[in-house]
Image 1: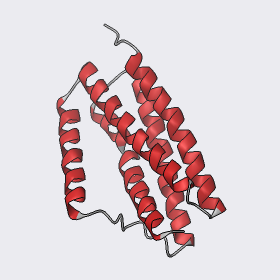
Image 2 (image 1 turned 90 degrees about the horizontal axis):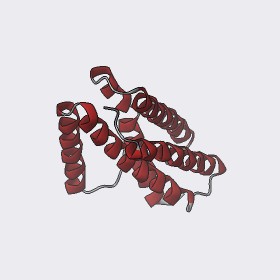
Image 3 (image 1 turned 135 degrees about the vertical axis):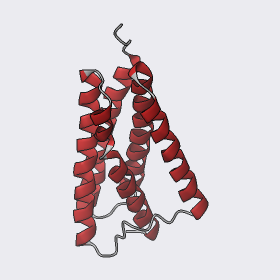
Length: 156
């Protein structure tokens, strides 16, 4: 494992940790069943991957999931984006909420999928390789579901 891939796994772990909680938004926002199903599937997939990555890291002490290697300005920018998105989602309702949520999930799934693919290209450990390949496949399927909802007109 290359040192830089350790940072990649830390970034993946951080993102999965955030996305595993996305379904909590549905507690305060009542939306259509199709949206709820996709968001719960994203949260569950990310929760399982988050836990699995934690197990893989425990098996390899050199895999530090706390060190993303990001410069402080990048960390602050990401925090600012997350806070802005959270405020937008909490302020929105109806179709606007749905669009904001689906767009944010599309971005997150794009990032997770590309990061998993990038990690798979340099991974030599068979267990981690299988993990990132499965994750890529899972998030690609979920992203197709998100895009299908974005294309579907809202019911009046």
